[in-house]
Image (cartoon, rainbow over all chains, first blue to last red; front, side, top):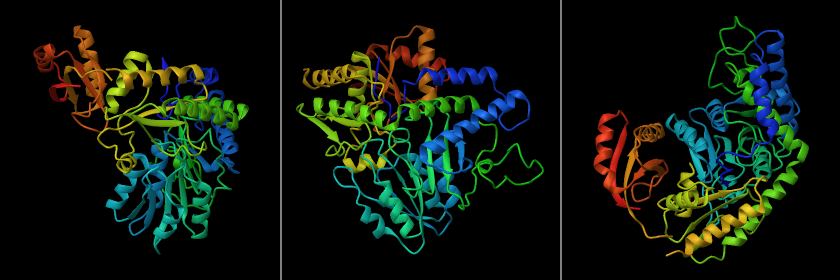
Length: 379
Length: 78
């Protein structure tokens, strides 16, 4: 099997990730619930994972990072925990439903929403964000990279813009964490939402949220925290504020191993390799007659995604042929990115998305190119 | 891409119903497989069951027997 669906979840994980999950299941108790050996072992790995993530994202105080189940939980927390009726919020058409649906929900509860449009290549103009700012604008929430086109947004410029206008900046780094430089200080990110199971190479069911000190965020959930048992409300201190209930320590132990691997090898190495594979695939398919490729390939500074269609063929059919006849895993359809598909005019057809990992090989990419070539010419 | 062919395609209310269909058909020894929902039916993702068109009656009987929440059954070229 050749796996090119890494934008959905990374499939090739370092062996150390699986071993860490196994070890945690065998040896660890409940983190922060008791002071016996099994509980402490669990607490130590959770703390170590927090520290490594803080190192990766340049967070000075690792207690500002809370663990969640995924980016969706983090984004729901950021959006519903910070916005109120009467607030205005700005986002873009590049967003995933994990950003859009909570925003639509808040719109229904009295918040106002502006969605920045893109050009034919899927890029937005930062000036359009600035033009959309109103007296009651509270926050900009946007992705770092489109899960459909792979185009990046310049989060450093957006962060600077937010700082200039005294707005909160929440960044969704689901497609970029572990691959692209993310620095909450330099990029002025107030709330960072990440998932553990994509570029961070951890297990599914892991993710997190960083909240800058001084920002008061309401939790989605309340419950056990391991501290302040007799308090009637959820403790307000991070990370307990956003970590009600038993953590997924088995998963977090795996995430710790994934981030260790990334820090050991370096994101520059991982990104360079992914981008080489993406470029090789792009160059191999771009000249095939009838191939349409979406997104901006004038730069290589983009997530390792190539979304395409063959003529007018249904993307579901092409993806299914790739799976059945070539044992190649891709993703077809709408990719939970409705506005991006609307902008590209691909709502009906969807798109076939190839997304690469640094664990993929050039030979695998060449087999993918050959498959597309054959499918596009067969009668 | 090859010529389209006639298939029976069954759509479901949700993904778990599609998974239940696969499990049930496997247990009953009924041929067919899960495919992405074709655009001829709807855009916007999801799983569907695809089988040979001569299976339609058998599948309808099967669906009556089990408690799987299917949405529609189509015979179409995909």
